[in-house]
Length: 353
Ligand code: SF4
Image (cartoon, rainbow, N blue to C red; front, side, top):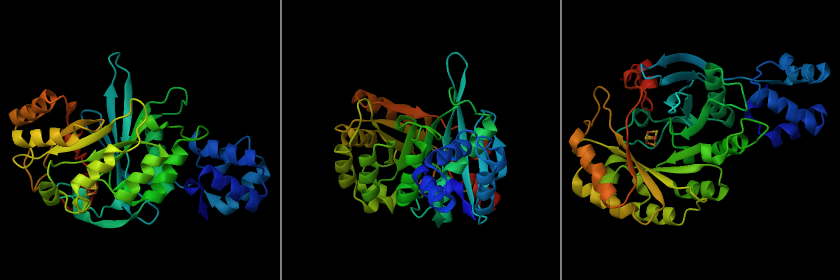
């Protein structure tokens, strides 16, 4: 039986027309029930005829990922371990932020692959290796689980505001399903996330970067983590196969909308990439690119290969960038008490950490 979460709206329309003989508007109704009203049962689709609902139930299903575990941190960060149809486990994290008026909004960190082939040396998911790509339905199913958890059912007042593809996997190595997910997210009859509410974070994959840029369907974040090719090759050996100078040249010509900037992610690893000279090199590297830097303080798990950076060095690193007119913000890790870093919950649940 077909899981309808895996169909884009044009695909659903085509399938319902050819297989069920239903008109186009019926597919739009079903699509709205699935993504906006979060129906998991065809019987709930009250504006769809009984005969059509019966035919749908015979040939299709609406299967969400199953919640295997939920952990909530003292700061509100909530991490879900999800079990997919074949038993594969992935993680997704909800991160809260409160406005000055005390209104709580959420950002969701999405996974795009089961495991990851990139093997970045600081990452728990990298340690697991690659299992498989996630389908569009599995990628978007993470959002349905989160919206249900949040009781987020008012399209005019969504509390889940932003999505970041920063969970397990390298999204640009699962380009087909990630692009289909982005197209579906952008549909105002469905989840209706505009591109400026979505960020795809990548180590930099040449072909995927060009296609994502041409689509204009999401903002871009690039994981740099080192100011030189040599150090990057040590920390992120597979990502560094696309040399740093070529990656930066591609970013210089990356198509950006007005007011859009590329976010550079830079994980500060104690004594490895957090020196004052490295801050200067980094400033030189990104000076010509319309971007901003997120400095993320490394939060070592037990047995991790790196140490947390010294607080004074973090401050000096940030100041050095500001002095060179580079926008840099130190991001505090959230959810430290629940292993909220990518891959840590799955690794803990399978006894790997
Ligand atoms: Fe993969 Fe991202 Fe982890 Fe690197 S940091 S191994 S790209 S999941």
